[in-house]
Image (cartoon, rainbow, N blue to C red; front, top):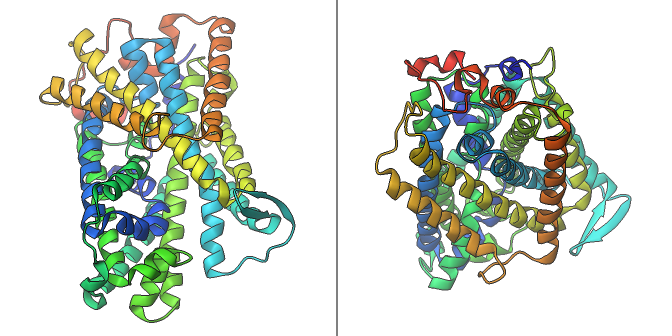
Length: 485
């Protein structure tokens, strides 16, 4: 069995990695929810919740920061967990990560159609059904499905095409954000921002949403097998992406609060767009804001579909899922079948309409919690059991970081469990259970069906440089990331 991982394109440079992570984190949520965050917690309360959320994510991010350059292989949590704990923990990490990513990708289609409808009203023909009070029309769903097919095609064509697309869309998102913030700073009114803080309950309500808003920096490890970046640069890119996303959310909350009164920020069709239109005194500016929102949707959609496909590919390439999902396209150098699977899920989810958005967001957030837990456990286990592992970047105070990472993961899990403040509802638990049951059965079938040695599986997961039951080989130069998988 050859080392098929070597065939993936090494197309991502530093700016591409940053655009991938930042663009994936900054999607559609801030456009719809910035006004609500401020209404719940007050302007300073909402900004504080995101500052605290960023600090919490940094503890988990530090585990990624050490593990990614130490094991720079496609799959992220899949390869970390296998190196640290073996087959089934790796499967759990992979299923959780792919579920988290595809859960978010699944609601980007309905979000895209909602944004387009704000700029150019979509004719509503062919009523299909009503889900959670929202009528799903064939014409409305078709807009999201067409976008899903395009995103899938871009990813299918190659990592370079995906990187170019991500960079252009992220640039558009940032430009619109700068215009919105500048307008708020020069033409807004601080009186609109009252109250600055509401109460602890409101603050907690905003903090509940933070985990889902920061998902995306963890896409960086998924692209490790396709990076053309020095190993020692990866940790700084990870942490920088978290800080950049936190700054974005905080500045957008500020701009939203000073741009329009509460009634417009909360009662509008698309709150941030309505706030921008109010502040600039012309509805055309609301449509310009939606252009930025569309860029945010596309960057998030592209990033999560990209990451989800790489996780599934990593498992399938190592015969931990059906091997056909591990096929690499002979021309484009992409995990083509895994991309098509993710694209199909993303496309047909558009038929569920806007009413299903909250299901996807909440269920995928629980997948994020499991993903973070497995990565932090891998960090702890590898520090204890494989101290000789070559680590181009070593986290200081590893015991403290590991403990805090577990506490952060436990806190996030508490939010969504039945006894927590925002428990998942029955249909959301159904999504979680169906995904893990089907994935677990396929992993069990693969384990018994494929006759593969431990050495072959490690070669598939880690490549020659990082395979070996006893631990990874030493790496002399951080710049060798160009030649390693």
